Image (cartoon, rainbow, N blue to C red; front, side):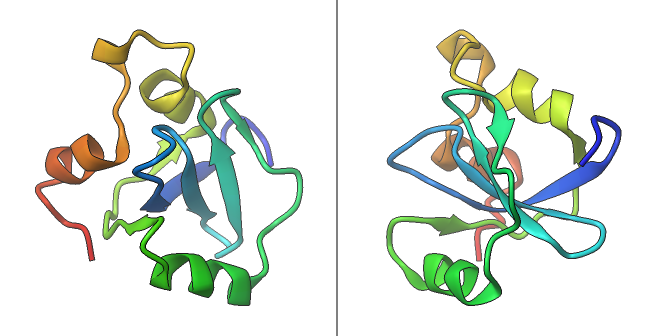
Length: 100
């Protein structure tokens, strides 16, 4: 994964603002960890992602917007002031309420 690769958000954690499941253009899914602004090293198992999306601990996001890793860090990492970062519920609202 390079800084220039683009990612789209497919799920957000309401209990841990900034934690996101993201997908790259190859369809590989990773965890974006909001507290550190980093991506998981490896890709997530598709069955694991499917289970996350069915759980009530993750909010599925239906968004076609693509973000660079830096954009995700700027918008969702915990190092940003609360007024400048977006939690899962606000993310859904900001995307026009397009949670699945």
